[in-house]
Image (cartoon, rainbow, N blue to C red):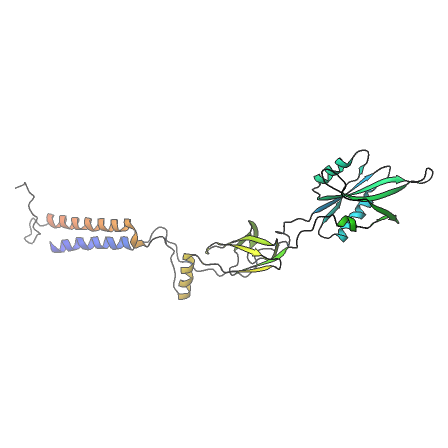
Length: 319
């Protein structure tokens, strides 16, 4: 009887130990940390990728009478204004005839072109009653939408067919140019990390410096095996360098420590240790109870012809 009882108890303990040491289904095979590559994985970002403040637009509109073609004069005037007013987007628009486009029409054309201010080149024929007719040219600032004049006319003379004028009175009425972009350098200790600034994807690290607007920006970095990085950075006009050291995730940190120690690491569920799982201890307790019951039953059934059998207590109510 005693050997059978001992055998059943040992079987129950073996079952419980097997359940305790069983590997959960979420276990991963041993992995070796992959060293970061040093080869750049992204092309340089254009210098104006995030400097989104556009230069204010100034449109030159030529309005003419007669058979003159004022397009070359308008282009020459626009080129001269670009030289003396950097940081403004000065463009020449298609000329219009005076009989077809009044001041309101000119203002509407400026608004359609998204111009902040307009320069109207007024071309009128002038000359004696008899003889060649020569053009008389003048410039003045006009407002978009309304086409209202914003200043006194400026005389323009033609020298060898090219318009000559004083741009000073016009330039003082131009909108101010946007501030120059600031240089932002982002240095990350992990290659291949995905970098985004204000939701704009800059590519994978290492990345080239970018030019951004002065002020606050949201920097986010993600890399496999590392905790996400997010920070609000304030970029001054002089520029900024941000050095980022990514923190390995829990499993990744354990793998790195194991690699340094010369051992391996199996990733398992990290929410709770295995020995804290309620279902494991319920299975172990059930296995122990089943083992004991089986041992007792075997001992009871085998004790009929054996004088050493374990005595079974009588059941109340039965003879």
